[in-house]
Image 1 (cartoon, rainbow, N blue to C red):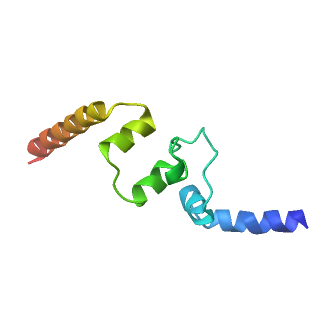
Image 2 (cartoon, rainbow, N blue to C red):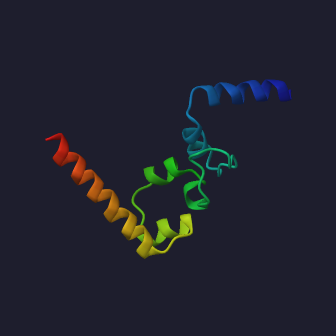
Length: 91
């Protein structure tokens, strides 16, 4: 009986990405070795599921990564600057 259940479960997993499976089953991901894993239960421990749920505040992002809101703001500004420089260089 358990082999049949396992085969059915594998069929479901084969047709979905990892984050779709986690999101659809409503359980948090436990695969800490995954590069998308974050310690955020509201997003099922998956950065992809978290971003699909909508925007987060700088404080929420900081809490996830163990950084202050101000440090996240600094990183954000640096990213915007790099994007702007890239766009200017391309055009």
